[in-house]
Image 1 (cartoon, rainbow, N blue to C red):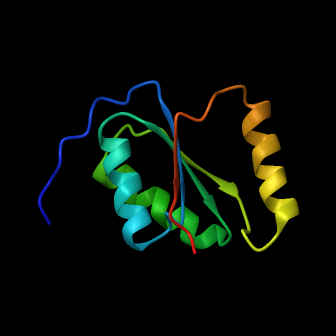
Image 2: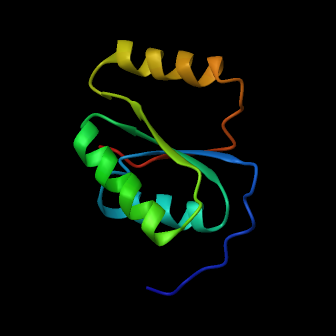
Image 3: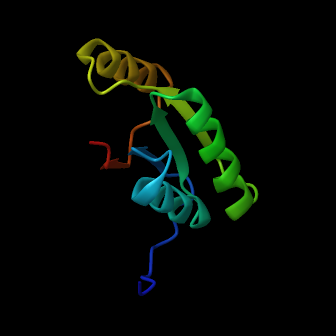
Length: 99
């Protein structure tokens, strides 16, 4: 796969669903390397923790965190939206990768 140029994203908030493995994880790693604050909404806390560890190893100093999300539950989606709103930061980049 050819590498592509991604602009500096310091100070930007990126939310990547499905980022505990596969393409989503690779996207989250890439965004973290260019300075984005990355949120990984995950259903499985253990997979989320493993993804955080991998991203931090790939991008030391990365600002990356997880939040709870079960896309099969509209209540869970609403809870995540409420959480992100309460944090007071606009979502600059949303990647809906999860199935």
